[in-house]
Length: 107
Image (cartoon, rainbow, N blue to C red; front, side):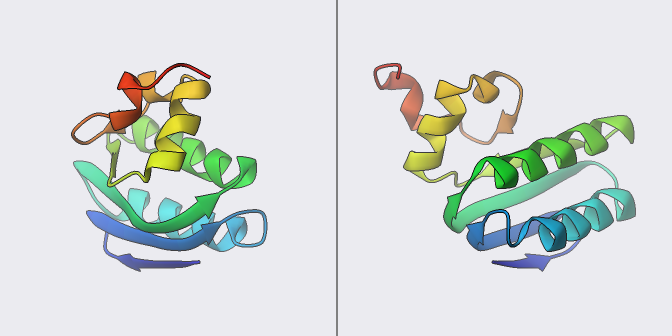
């Protein structure tokens, strides 16, 4: 997993899973705490995430809300879009441009 960027936009790539969760959590919380306005997470380079990785994203979302910021997901891969729809988290998270998966059958 790799995360690069600043307090306004981060690119997340590789696998966001139980092995990378602690580092990802630290990077996201640092970015949330360091800036203002929207924090964009560009997920175009993300290969996969597991429940732990999704929990890290949700934790960053909650933390951003507490400090008056908004976490915005950009470039969510289709497989992960389906998971967001299946868990109904697409209704909670801000997703730039919406989801392609919303037109797919519900799982």
